[in-house]
Length: 312
Ligand SMILES: [Zn+2]
Ligand SMILES: [Zn+2]
Image 1 (cartoon, rainbow, N blue to C red):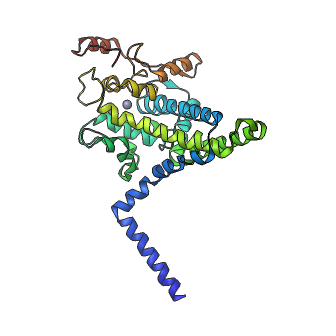
Image 2: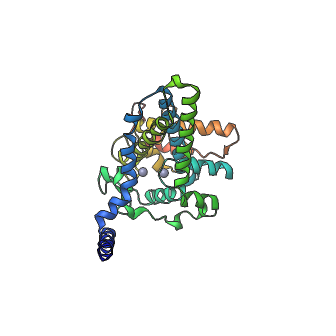
Image 3: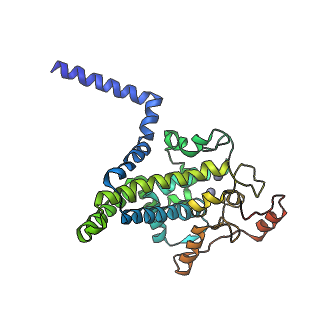
């Protein structure tokens, strides 16, 4: 008995030491993202099927749209209006990307715009480095707290506070739906060669890791590589390939110049898939009052020394 007590005391001592140690704290904060990457390797064990790849394409596309149009353009910048129900849908689907909730996301993003590439910017590759801007800052628990004063407009909706508080629920619900889909398909169409676990691996874990890195590219790549159309007082840039991967978020220099626009590409050749989908949803009456760049911004673009280059 005495031996057991001594063992328990030493275990408690180890844990209290762990929580005092900054490195261990960081390790604990970053473990969900590490675990996500490790579990994505499970796709090698569950095998491949075309229908599982289709599940990946669907969950990638729907969630990238929910992040770009929802978390970014709607929750962070209020670039269009929608109903309370569709606002909830955008919040729930975006949160299933395992990037915490819309209030945490919007608060940090508003902070980024206020201090872009200045000392206070939480994910600037100019102030720190590319690794920090890409993923380092997310691994750091210092930014886990929601800056409530920045999201007073969102705070009045209890359902959004619920999503933010129980942000694991949208994630678990997506895993469950994928598992049921894969299991049902396996039962009725065994020729497809899929299973519940295979659907979860490709549709959630592999897809989520891809969504992580394309989202993170907006914070890292588009503040380092690409062309600056506007002389903004930060290093934001336009990158066509990040725009392709993120459905329009790569036109980041345009966006920093006029963050209120629901459209980030300025011309037809600056492909902005999220904006095209938003226009479709506008026709269906699900969103309205989409803000776009005013004429003075187009005039300013024409006056800039850098020419508009379709290949950039
Ligand atoms: Zn930026
Ligand atoms: Zn923004």
